[in-house]
Amino acid sequence: MAIKQFPLPDVGEGLTEAEILGWRVKPGDAVTVNQVIVEIETAKASVELPCPWAGTVRELLADPGATVEVGAPIIAIDMGGAEPADNGGKTDEESNGRVANLVGYGPRATSTKRRPRKGRPAAAVVEAPPAPQAEPVVRAEPVVQAGGYVPLAKPPVRKLAKDLGVDLTNLAGTGTGGVITREDVQSAAGAPPAAPTAAPGARERRVPIKGVRKATAQAMVTSAFTAPHVTEFLTVDVTPMMELREQLKSHPEFRDVKITPLAFAAKAVCLAVRRTPDVNATWDEAAGEIVYKDYVHLGIAAATPRGLVVPKVRDADQQSLKELAQSLEQLTSTAREGRTAPADMLGGTFTITNVGVFGVDTGTPILNPGESAILALGAIRDMPWVVDGQVVPRKVCQLALSFDHRVVDGQQGSQFLADVGALLANPAMAITY
Image (cartoon, rainbow, N blue to C red; front, side, top):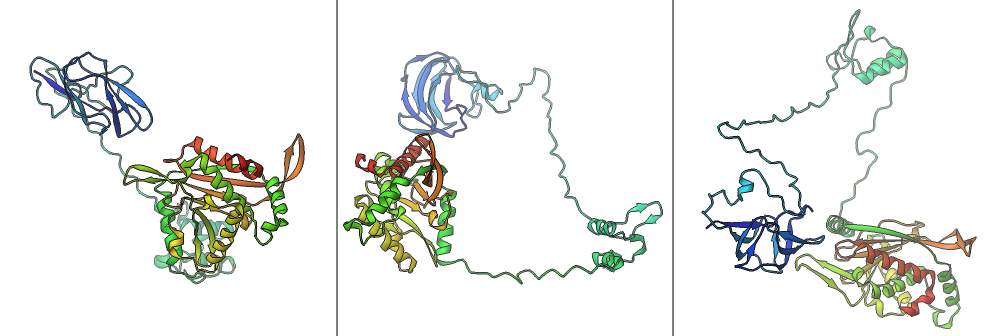
């Protein structure tokens, strides 16, 4: 009785593992070559795997729902006949340097060995590694000319002598070993010597990396090299928003409230999250889960004398436009005074960075660790805009959304950004969310 184990193959996607979705056979079933025996799911697609041999299913080595690494055995097939020789766990095809072609799969993209012909020893071909190329070394060496040797001088000095019309054969070098220096050439040409270079650090100052700057740097490095960032941009006509802002200034309820474009953006984010909750979720690597939050703890990036801090507006999605404006004013005032408590900078679910206050149009913001999206709000400028076929001046703003592509797909990120833009372009749409 010959039993072979079929290892999970690389299906040509460069992936290292797959999940067993379901078996099409069971122990005792007879199988033929290229019969589909199992369906697997990789990170990209579902794939049906055919059997490479004919025989009887002896054992299923992986349960449905299990994640299996490429190369791990998933099924044992009873081939019948004599027990095969021990090939170190490899199939006959692998040990002979050949891989069976299955339906839907081409030959592996790896090199194979040709089986030697009988009676002729296999020639061992060893390719010698290429000889390391030495780094070019610039030496101050004499150059042979018709009249003899030129005194030692480096190529830059030779070029300088040529530019100044100095004959090096008439100079005696003052450098180590008689090397002709730049000063020698300049003196011979009557040119003033170059000003001495300032000592390293003479016009520099060093500040220890600590406090907020150190924490920010560590967080940004962690985010940039952990979460795969994608950034999308949208230019929006926010004239209706700015008109509504002017109207609210004279409204009795908003008379003592500072309504800013940031407040409108915060409200738009909270409303748009309802339709695309993925931007408010978290990737939990340890648990292997995506955690969806039914609340919005909105982080607002604030520049302070101590560095960048991101305090949070807790349950921002439960606040009205007026309440958000009040919360933002208190939050930014506290941050600039350096009185933000550490606990107020933890547990955010989404962040807005208002680069527009610095006159910047847009940027590519980096995610805060533990969050899946961040919105950059650009400066609002008067720009030519086409309205009803006519070019007219409008208030225009650019938005930039960065998101974690592990959690948020392109469709979801685009949908969210479009929703925020639509709400800023037409605040009346808020009643539909």
